[in-house]
Length: 226
Ligand SMILES: Cc1cc2nc3c(=O)[nH]c(=O)nc-3n(C[C@H](O)[C@H](O)[C@H](O)COP(=O)(O)O)c2cc1C
Image (cartoon, rainbow, N blue to C red; front, top):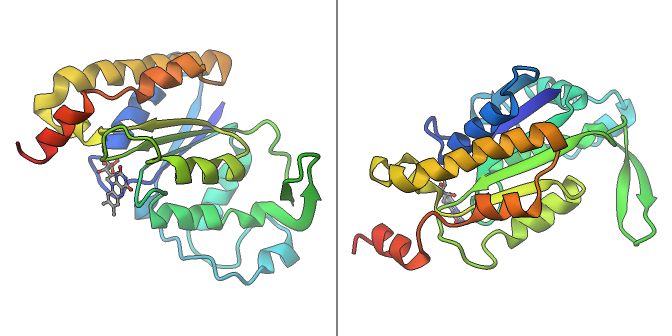
């Protein structure tokens, strides 16, 4: 499988990418997969200009000459795209959102209406076999609604991807929290193994990955230095 990983954390020691790395370790246990990791912050990706020249050219590329066309080529050839990023203001970080906006050369202007009334643009290539996995970390403890905006966007943009939204991820880079972080990292590795076999994650597995490492009240007390 060709796997494209878009690491959207601007940090070298990303809390979220620690989870993704362990997932990849499990996924590629047998060494059968070709994994290409891109640290998006190191790439030059300008915002979309909204010129729609990609829709006249229909060559799967953007007219802006920066690093996005390399990403578009990898995206088009991938079997699995993993979006790994921290939650920023209930959404993805802006430099990664620029990558997402500029995937528009991969669709045509032509609109398609589905039986359920939803409307989307026809794809330029056959993406029906493309799998998408979203791994998002965040600084808040578990509370209903924190990931709602992100989930709504990802569901429409990626046609119902597998999504893992993890609370309390700063604990992953705190040495004193290793006793609670390591079991979660192990679960991510196991989830990678599961994904390699079934190309999806069961609801039970996702629930295990999203379970808070420590109770909400303890986490808040710790953050507040109480
Ligand atoms: C600009 C900014 C916005 C953030 N917004 C949110 C947010 O909306 N919800 C949340 O739970 N955490 C938020 N966080 C916290 C990060 O998601 C959290 O620190 C995460 O663990 C960082 O992951 P990383 O190390 O992979 O970059 C925000 C952090 C920053 C810097």
